[in-house]
Amino acid sequence: MKIFNQTKDTWISENIREAVSFSESFSDRLLGMLKTSHIGGVMLKTRFGIHTFFMKNPIDVVVLDNNFKVVKISTVKPNCLFFWNPKYFLVLELSQGTVKKTKTEIGNYLKITP
Image 1 (cartoon, rainbow, N blue to C red):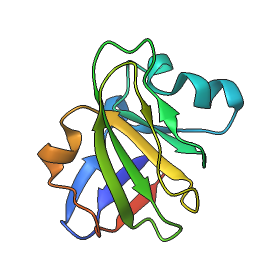
Image 2: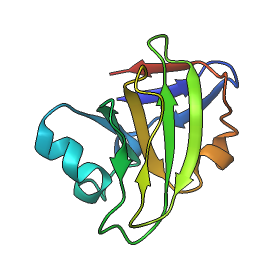
Image 3: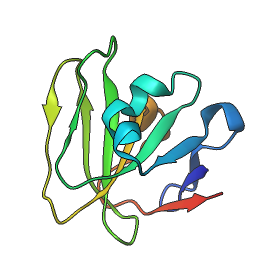
């Protein structure tokens, strides 16, 4: 998948090496970025939160509403838990620095394409 920030008119992830995979299975959600060192991030559907246990580096986390509007952003350090309002269930786990590099902010609208 590719991710485009429509508000900033910039790509967050646009090539195959930085593509975002969509994780629906329990094991994919459990492993998240641990399983995907070769890509720029993972898109998850979950309402409970994420963890960064066993990770070596922090990750950028972007929480989206049903319209792909950014509602929360955080850099999460290794071995931590991160929670948000459970009414939101779309989450992007991205390599650290991606949010800053792309100037993604709360209120931005993202577009997800195959």
